[in-house]
Length: 153
Image 1 (spheres, one colour):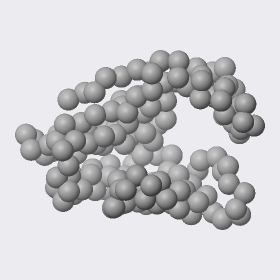
Image 2: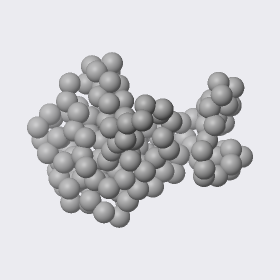
Image 3: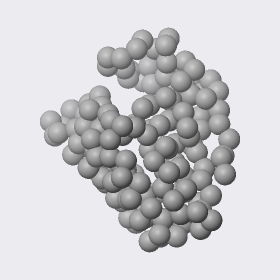
Image 4: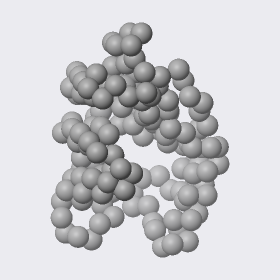
């Protein structure tokens, strides 16, 4: 599992008093353990600018991981960044470039998708549980961020 940034610019839903990047790193490690992912590469690229900076470092890390682990497939965000998140779109773009550099030896690439309309259900369920979005657009503008995409290889 490669994670490009520590997510330090994101909303902090934690009340631990710990820096957000530490909370996010611990969450990633815990999730990987639950999923039985043995290797996590948490890169230190700048959160919020993955589309515009860190190209060579991110591409090099992805290429190195593919060469080292020889995966059957690579799974990343779709070209819409799952819900139009600029960093997620950047990860998709850099993953496509990294795999293209491997030529015919590159494994198939698949993008994570959310079915049309599912984001509304997620928002409603979160609201019912007392979660609130801090800052950013109001909930009505979040509809339509998720687009149904098929695998692209």
